[in-house]
Length: 340
Image 1 (cartoon, one colour):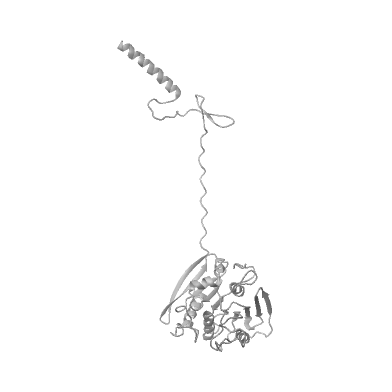
Image 2 (cartoon, helix red, strand yellow):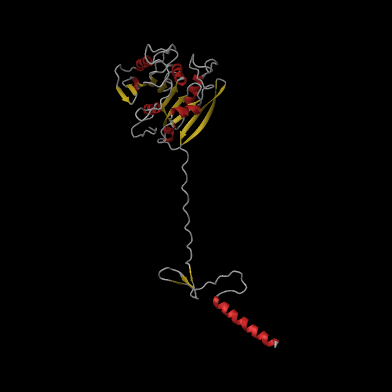
């Protein structure tokens, strides 16, 4: 009896095994999937049909590798602080250089900040950084002695401490002119307020050290007999309380008027008395004397108001920065990079 039962049970297990194998499953697996079988693709959907007639989803294609990300462009400029020893003091200047210059040798602007102004503040105020970003010029910002320049009788603490700013700036200009990326014939000294007075002082101490100057809201504080021809762009606000614009406008500061300084500079450069070009742009008026000795020119740009402040311009009136670009950087085929 026991043998017969065992025989019957064995027969039933054998039959179950056959059915399981026919179904493609392995007995005893918790989860299972059919072994690979030859598949037939339908003409329409491309689905797979198993030997038992069951339809499964088509295999998912391997994902296409994503292209490598495009390298992000680097910054348009580099900024370096250069230190040098002058007159027993450690002095420095910031050098802002384009990473993609438009030419092998570029013009350079050496920009002197106003009193009580840092280099960072001057970079923000003048708005000239886009010129370097566009690869058109190298910007140089010397740092004054405790944010001041010794422009003769002006301005403390540099003047009261007898700081040799003329020697410092002469060393800066020498290094800038020797830079292989700078066109030494196109180095322009730019000065705002106390920095403008310092530009006059340096020109007086070392005539011809630069071939062009830009002076913003400043006149000389001392007389000077310099005779070397130098191109000059002078920018003034007619209502400036610190700088008289015309004779008789002196607000008690004892300074020479802007128009008199321009007349003296025209005489120094051997310019004719007749204006070569005049223009009005928005609120701004300009006069140019270009028939000067040695190819120099003198320009006077006047804003009717603004006090003793840098003029940012507007939709119709060019900013002071744009006028500097036109004077010192612009050339045929070069696009103005400054925002309107």
